[in-house]
Length: 122
Image 1 (spheres, one colour):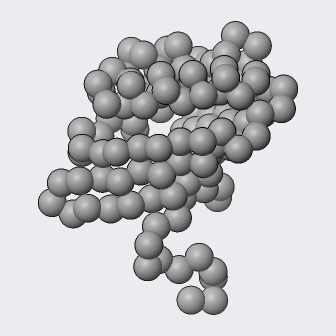
Image 2 (cartoon, one colour):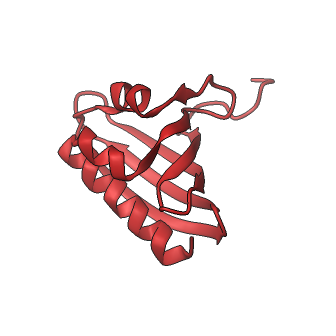
């Protein structure tokens, strides 16, 4: 997938997230997709598991930039700011692998947030 196709996928992801439209995930993720909430987390296996985890109606803003797109693989830099009672900011890298039909078969998040340690020594 090229950068434009990856950008379109991210835009549809954001639209579905804002609308809390889990049915839209059918067009974003393969039926047997793996979703890692962090590189060392046990993956959510399959579309039903992703749908069960995915809902969150906390208001947010999001910006995303495709860093790389090479064949089936892509990396996207994402910044998310949640509102609500406890505001939180995240800066993520999404590592994605796509099927030829444009649905993700792998979604891996590398999330960081302010004032949290980024090394094991802390």
